[in-house]
Image 1 (tube, rainbow, N blue to C red):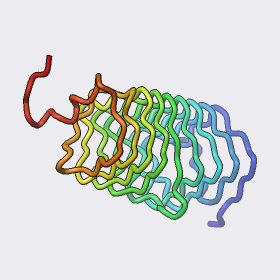
Image 2 (image 1 turned 90 degrees about the horizontal axis):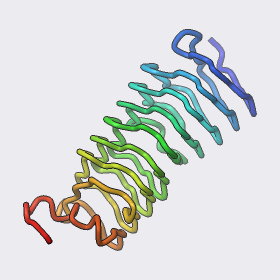
Image 3 (image 1 turned 180 degrees about the horizontal axis):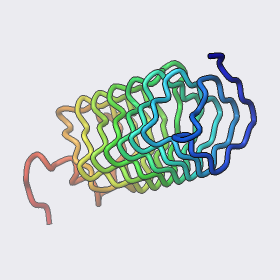
Length: 190
């Protein structure tokens, strides 16, 4: 089967779980209200693409290229990002539901997460240097050997980060949410 090349195409209301997404390269494409749920998107390359109001729930992105990709208002529940192609990997997320997803061991420097639900997301061994987390909910999220240097958590909440097990040098926190760094001590601050 030959690979497709799509450039500056607009895909609206397409259920790729029925129609299938051909393997290939998608550059500067805009996907609106599309369904990718439970698909394996290996060997698909997305560059400079925008996904808006799409459903990626339980999607496996191993061997998928995500270069300069933006997710807006998307449902990414249980999505497995680990294993995606790390060469030129760059993603941003705005107003996305990302609960139970995994970014295990990915280089996500300077990634923007704005108004996202990141409940029980696995960030183990992820490099989030200079990442921005603006108004994000981290209930139950896993930070284990995670690089969070210069990351900005000032407006986020419900995180629990062990400073002894993660690199947090020069990370930014607010006075209101700094307690998330002390959870392991089970102390009360009034």
